[in-house]
Image 1: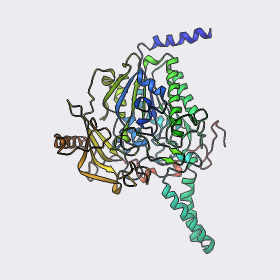
Image 2: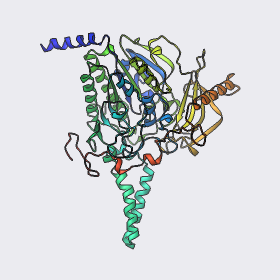
Image 3: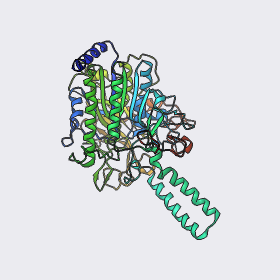
Length: 568
């Protein structure tokens, strides 16, 4: 009887799906380089399950993230709009959200494709990383939470995996400021011993409070797991997270196999700190990073296996990508901890160079998309929003989008991308523009500024660990640097008026495209169209930790649950 049931259920599901809207499973990896995947040219890291998705579906060779860092890239992905339209672009040093107890995040009035799909009757879920804020004005208002942005179910990290979550891995959050505050606390403490004055005591107390409480206790504040709006681990148990997140993703698919669903599986791999899961540790030829890549590929395989075993494959669009390029500057004595971006220059945090923004893009949908198709045209993570709207038959009016429906390209009905122009931001600053002229194979990229690599002659910003987008950290170019990515994908041979007959036309056409784009942005009071007048979610005021906004499992500040829900 059990054997018969196993064969009948997928058949019944198949007939039930004939007139049903398609399911969507979007798998987004963290910090992975395009050169880390077998089907994109890596022959030493084993990724058979990702490669299988590509061989059974469509592979995009010029798939572009809208930003080179987690928070703005994911905001653009979900909204189909450049991050600065929702205030998610940085003006200075801090380019991602740093504290769960901050007030910044994806604005409550923004529209995500999850919200649109909910309105079309979809069950929606997000498993894994969020990193787009939680609270606005008080603990528990959850104004930025996934549940408020169209996800009926959430399980995972409202923040991101980072080094502070694992003892001995160092810190990622304002390390230089932490060092200064710690030293100041020690100096004032020594002075207190010798002078014993009330005012000095108050200074010591204040300095330790500003340093110790928000920074030393970071694992308690940021490294947490939520199920919907409830904190279920604080701090979380890192070692078993991959298996638990996979289980949550599989269970969501199984629970909703008989109705249209959207699942975003936002993996914590391959961001640092790297996992050391038994069964994968030491297995690859590329140290811990390679081990994590191969574990992540195994997880992708398990999700695919779940879809296929339930008979859902022919009615499910599966998508695989990374939020931006690999972190080339991240290494320690044990080896490279960040990804490899193949032939492309630069990496994570570099908004102009291809290595920071060109990512894998793979779609599988048996029976609908041609197996083995390869698309070399420019496409964007922002294209997912209009694509899912189209497939869900959502024809209701919407606000201005920066993405386009990908289905004509994916199915082979169109050979040219609708992205004649594509803009590349680093924070709120327009870093570069690409132009794909009609009737031409060329992809011209115009760089208005480039990051200053350190030390000089290096291929990244090794002194600051990530490149920055402002001030003395960049060099502005007049005239701009121009490359033809079709002939020079590594951006190593800049064009000149002497070597490129269309040089003046390239500058003219991209300048006009920039003006058209800026005319769609709200003006601030100064009339500066470089920045939108929507509230800036990435200011120091919104990013820094506020105790009254901190998610907590109990009565703040006495927070602490083990992963099985018991008070620790």
